[in-house]
Length: 114
Length: 113
Image 1 (cartoon, each protein chain N blue to C red):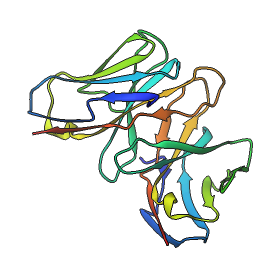
Image 2 (image 1 turned 180 degrees about the vertical axis):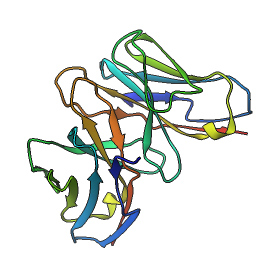
Image 3 (image 1 turned 90 degrees about the vertical axis):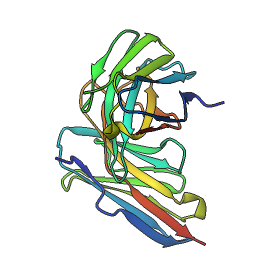
Image 4 (image 1 turned 60 degrees about the horizontal axis):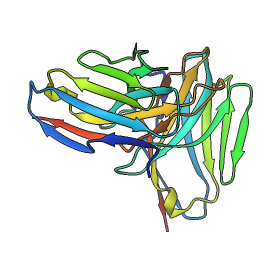
């Protein structure tokens, strides 16, 4: 079983629709992150959370919101989807113990907005 | 402004030879560097990391070298295997308790049998 699970894996929707992407983890990590990847680009941080109800903006948070109601779950919402939000979205987790801990990623959600 | 740069979009090597993937950075506050490997339809998988207080870290076939004065790091894979064919991302973290990674654009490695 995957340690970091993202649902759905693929989603096609229309402009203006509200979309929620879910992430759950069984690693027991405190820290969770949402990234997006566009073709030919690296991953860019959207939001991150270091604890339940702790929310922090990343470098590209406009147009997105997140919710962290439980340690194991971190959801990403697009309130009114637009075509340039078409991308591959990744959730990641890391331990809050120690200074340098690698992040562990889910397998991604491919989102297409028409 | 791209703070982590992987200037080679792709690299092709023969099985059994060495693969060298390069990464340059501009932010002198980066203190921890990581390499991730990504297969199609999967998420990035952590491969190896290095702290800025070291200049080399080795794990099996994978070795990461850090040259702080040149703001350059490299990943060596010896010997390369066809299963190593993937996109490799370099990432960096700046100092402090905040844990945010800055990623390069990735290098597609192809290992030919």
